[in-house]
Image (cartoon, rainbow, N blue to C red; front, top):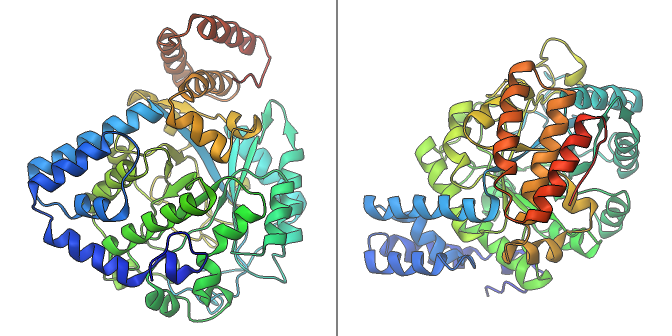
Length: 471
């Protein structure tokens, strides 16, 4: 029986409930009156359940789809304004004992060189990332209890936080590692991580087990229930995601929202972020062999419907996507993107972009400076802010501020101040000129006089060498 409050994976991600929801959506995909009523409900910005949201995703009426996209844009503007947070992945090790058929790290792949960073190599990678201007990382590692035990991950986190190079500092380390125990999640929490990220890959249990034929990841329930263990271990912020293309996208969309509903029902707070990767080329992986791969139009509709269904949740798109694809979905709901990314182990130290240990091919290969300037040209504020995590505004505390709109009084000023740090320390002359003009314009838009005056003072102090101001 479907039960969002259950702690059993097959009850809060209930196969029959998903099929019934998709059947309901298919029957009502052209029901204009129902769709309008769902959109009216969504305008209250309290989110939608998986059934209502599935109707919007299935909708085929052009005029109704225009309303869906317009509402997604409005919700994105209301909650996130024109800010886009930047981060980079840091691959620590590609040793892995799983047999995932869609990932080149799978244990049977003998063509890919295996590499694990030493702490000195971690240090050099972090300095290279700091010299780009990054303040927020997402660390990645394959699942291998011998080569990548939790002690190794914790040591890497400690190393990352310890490095202060010139004006550089990594202020937030998010962690994307395999499902683990409550005890290990407590250790990650105590190490000061930001968000714990774990992609479900697919919510279809039978397909999941086929795609993960060997290794500990084969256990669907243990993997799907990981977020509950993470929250039990004290981690407030968790990030969901599926790899679109492994299963029918409407099934994944429904399962993803059911997972979000489950977290809200059990823990009182939904996912901090949702990522939307698509299957893409990599060593030993040909996306054309996956019959459920989705095109750009479907991808944009998915982003819009997720934004409407979970208005308070951050949405992430990586450099898997091309510049053109990322530009299309920024205004529909995306709030975080990676920039200057390298998906190889040790890749940031290399002058020439290496490929031999990459997890996937990077479509958007521009430098961070180019991405920052591109965002500003599109009218966005590139943000390197990590203030909420460091001020204790996580979990339900963050969501409470987000839901009442108060978070805007922090995020907008913090985005401008962290952008100013980037411009002073790392930007090219062209990017710096564009950024200073944007900051001057955006500072005048801060509604509260006291905050506006303080931001102006802090911006001047940043110019003179001070760092790390935040609201």
